[in-house]
Image (cartoon, rainbow, N blue to C red; front, side, top):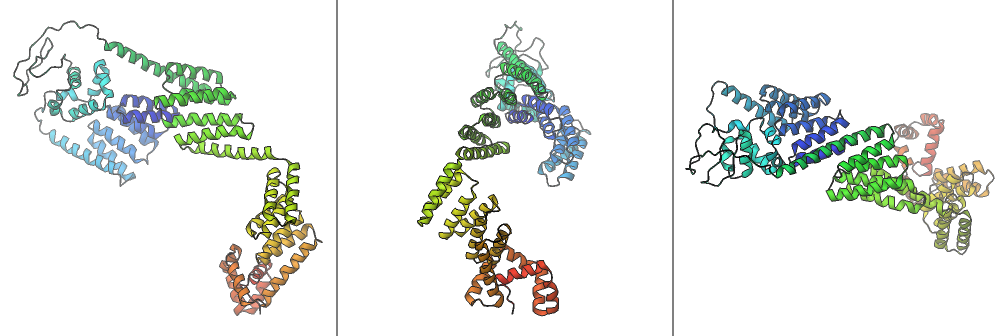
Length: 583
């Protein structure tokens, strides 16, 4: 919620609505009082309104909360500069550069502060004549006067007007450039506390009963200023609009209070009270969809999913009408998706939830939403498997696969075994049979994967070990095949296929040990072995490197190494792979 208020403050600041930005940042600070960024942002807003004392307070708080953050010192320096405390400004910028020596903003600020300090020092020795008769009108309290007056308050929402006044504050002598703008003339009347009317060149200008001191007119104006009696003014119609605006602001403020009360009730799990406050908040201000998303969160906690979904849908619809922050729309969609997941009972029920999460991600890619999407897709898949589970139909499909296997229709057999596994994913026999089909088709990696799954499901099923061992033997990984057959014999010691597998593997390993392999066989076996991560680890092991060296140069040390079972086992693997030959 603090992020939501912060986002509104940033938007208002970008639009030049600094007063509104301050209000949003204040709301955010009340929700996250230790967030240094919020104080920094509010300090910038105060500074934009020339309220440098308040800007200084927030800047100091920023630095207190985050002393190693360079931007805090930038805010501190700017506030001191605005208060003409140039020495303190220079000190603040220097402290910031100690934290971040390459920060260009701090360097620029320091240079400005030092220039201002030098200029102030020079001016203190000689008092220059005033540059402009109206110079005092554009002092530090200019923004406060313009904001307080009903006639000029609306102009503060117009960026071009704000920029003109900023220019006049910097250089009052530029006033002649803006005299044709009625808004500037109105602002000048407020700042000088006089009554002015917009006039064309040559027209008379209404003055107060007590005229100010005589001042020079521009060269192109020749007529003298005439006094007029101030006539009673009727109640202007725009005041009704201002009253309306005041009422709207009061309602917005009251709505925020209701929201805060709702947040407090929610934290206490007083859900009915929270709903009442959020409902009242939305009645007062239907332009803030956070009231709806918060109420939806309460309904979600209460298990009232239909009400939650209605609020979320209304929030999305209203948010798009108002062009609300896309993050708020995404939040409403995510909350709706969560409610739909809670209501899901079948795999199809997850489809609208998944679609809603996907829409939310198009609005704003939030990690939490992405996780909810992945969880929903996983739950849908698991539920589909459960709904499809049928051991009887799985057995029928496996029998059909067996018939195709006997007829050597291996692709068709694979289809039936796959369907059997969809109906019953825990059928070890179906995995074993499909592994046999893959072996017949020469798809050894797929067959090996199925054989391993078969063993995982039923470690005592001998057929799984014979399938796996046969594939490894075919791939000429004789040492691995030997290990597989030996593991199978632990569960079925008299199994003839496993015993035959062990005999065949030992025979092939002994051929390598005796050096009976042909050059082509040796080359092929070595090339294959070098792709095996286990062989690679053995060859890069410093201990094994020394063992292999001793085998060649130091027979006595080699005999000592052979007494170590681990070393012996690794040597045997290298012999089987054709890397080492014993003569």
